[in-house]
Image 1 (cartoon, rainbow, N blue to C red):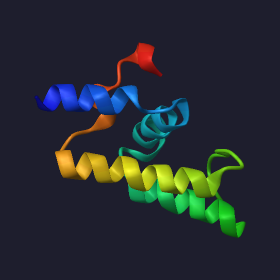
Image 2: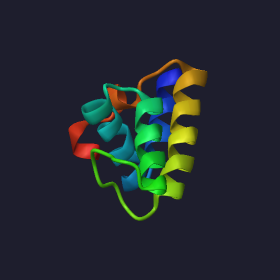
Image 3: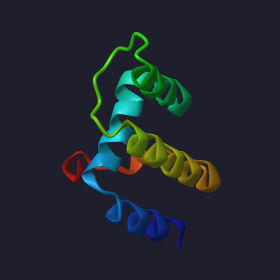
Length: 86
């Protein structure tokens, strides 16, 4: 049943959500907080590594939702995403 729940959740993810999950793992070692800090640095004009998008506030909300799902279900969404789903 848990796998079906994850599949349904993944089906509901938008491309932006999937990109955040992959960037989190590839650029930030799987750490949502480091990624969140990077985005906040962009908002304040502090030095940052990667240019995400002009939708930083939306990305921060997405990160909170994705991280919450992972914590509640003790799962890594990146491990569930097939390369073809990106």
